[in-house]
Amino acid sequence: MKRSAAERRDAFVALLERHANIAVKVARAYGRSPADHEDLVQEMHAALWRSFERYDPERPFATWMYRVVLNVAISFQRSELRRLNRRVDFDEAAVAAAELHELEPDGRAAQLARYVAGLGDVDKALMLLYLDGYPHREIAATLGLTETNVATKLARLKSRARSALSDGADKAAEGQAHGTR
Image (cartoon, rainbow, N blue to C red; front, side, top):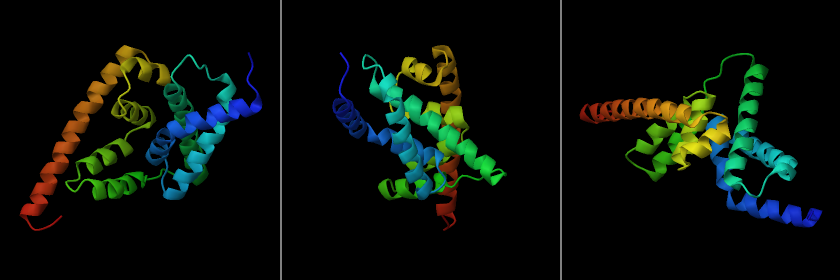
């Protein structure tokens, strides 16, 4: 049975409100500034609405949403790079780090945010999904990879993250010992 336009809109709004943090999180990871984050979230919402008719309610909404918003974010990032016609140093790591530093004084979350921000498109998406607690099967389905590929990539990313985070902690401790930060 086909739903009316009002019922479809209400269902969409309810699902979007329940999973709004997904779009915000992906926008922060892929946008360069707060203005980019807002633009990206709006683009994501529009893309989600345009493709909502094709959403299969038998599948988890969050997995479908991740697929759509990641595609929007990656397309946005690529179009921005083409528009600027140069390689861009992304500021999202600094923004995320500043926000997370307020929440976590020791800076571990900020270090992780900087690490994730410096990853490539697929690796960044993998880490975001992993950090959100998605199982390998759903990550694979969302990104179009095999479960084995997801497991292998995540093992490498986690290993590099541990190294990057321990290096950051060592540098912070060294800075405190010398009276700098």
